[in-house]
Image (cartoon, rainbow, N blue to C red; front, side, top):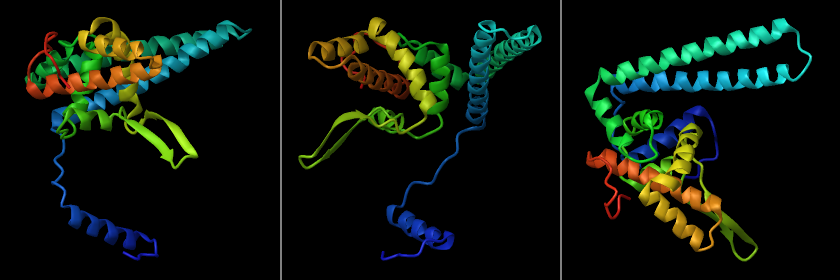
Length: 234
């Protein structure tokens, strides 16, 4: 477009022309109950991080000559955060029980071996927030697709996960995948096949995360519980 100036007004015009060219579908906001669930889960993540930091502080003060008042203060903070988290989890459960569609979504995802209640709750909020049209698109949003770094003969980078998406969702999926490589037949089979072909464990685990994301999307999209004998969910 030969645009050499960069100001807010010029950027707005360029973006407007780009949008007119692509003609994207109008954005539809998530339903109020999904937005409420997302807010609760975001608060839960924040409290979990606060609790982790306070527990680290307690470990440090107990290993050093720290005044008793400081140790007691940290312990009180930990007790407060634990109580707040328990209360918040109850509020999340009550919210899901009050909305049958969300509760059904959670029940579908928890039918997948290695997908526990907390993982299911977070993935329901994610799947209900965006119009994903395929398992591949969902995995790409989570940053689970491999990207290559190669140019000519001088740059031969190893393929790695893009990690272009919400880090907290990937962290949640990582822990679920660690369990899935032992207890989920589809994920376990893929993981063991990759190891047998000589792939590094972290590469195989990344593929397991992607497979589990595909399974979650398939169960959510098809509205059918997980089936261990299903040939391909992805």
